[in-house]
Image (cartoon, rainbow, N blue to C red; front, side, top):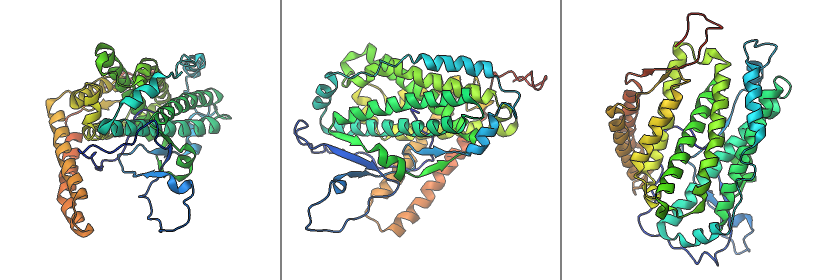
Length: 406
């Protein structure tokens, strides 16, 4: 799962001053924990600190990639072949063969180029690369956990769909492991076992899982393939070899998205009414805004690989939206210039929220200052959501409702 849907809340920018790094060849290897709350203050003690105490905690916000859970009983009912006679098992069986082929089985093989490149990345760009790897690894591992559990729970009701979920969890685990190995080039590692137990899980009903995860996989595809093509044309910006793997990697994301498209087609009630149109637009807005605000706080990363952040994001949003329009009954009109203007206004508002959070004011004053800013952000979100949408969708439900083809 390459990108994550999240609610909008600001997170702190990187400091503009260069962080101090010790010689990376001599640096101590650190295991990183990510917790759902700010790290607790530890009492001072003269005793020798344990290894656990040396682990670093990373602050989590609502823009941080999150872990999901769902109503597994409802999911079992949706894909029970005895209950749901409309399931197109032949399409799922074809997809299963595609996943079994495992095109990327031998793709994620590292070489010495990784560590050598990491050692050359210094200053603020090094810090930004570390966060890129941390966030990406967390998002992929989140997908692994969700898909693994779905594969386990659906074994009895629909073995074909269950096996596809298990094979997707294989892909996500492979991606997460590869990214975590990348962190080792920077003398760090995510404690994935800790993540499994300590992170808070966000509950989504199955249909929301379908909307959010489809978008996550497809936007991940467009992000990866765009970066890959850009760096292939501009090799002078190829500062770390992980990007060379993006061409094949993004095909995993694309296949995962296609599977979720098939899942939604198997449940036409998630696509063919007015509520589906409203939810489709909501999830598009959530995913696009989250990515745009996140990336605009990390412009140094994209500039480091020769990209203009806002141009890159708009390209990814437009291509993802065009892809999504093939299955969602309604999408946002992201090619309307007003859409980007509103995104840019949200970036400005978000920067004000960040400034309030970083100020020296007492918490009460901070919260009072946040009220009008959050109201302005909510207003922009609502105005963007209410922009005239594009009626879309190419799923033919004639088999079930003869007149309903949109």
